[in-house]
Length: 93
Image (cartoon, rainbow, N blue to C red):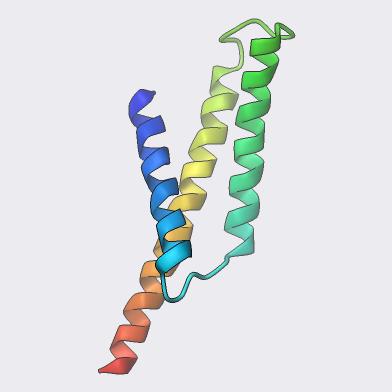
């Protein structure tokens, strides 16, 4: 899982760089909503196991699914940015 966390961190930093310095950062509200809900589920499961309400490791599938959903939403946001940049480059030529 550390590789997945590193990949998610890198994607999140890349999206932040695109948001700060990108020319056409498109806000896809469905991707943003799914990513936010997925991350909320993951953190809720981690918080429940940390607080002792659930036993540690009982809901790993749900936690991982939340992180995977978050990664997919980041990939969609990055893909939309690249698609918009590619289309705008084709118009400029």
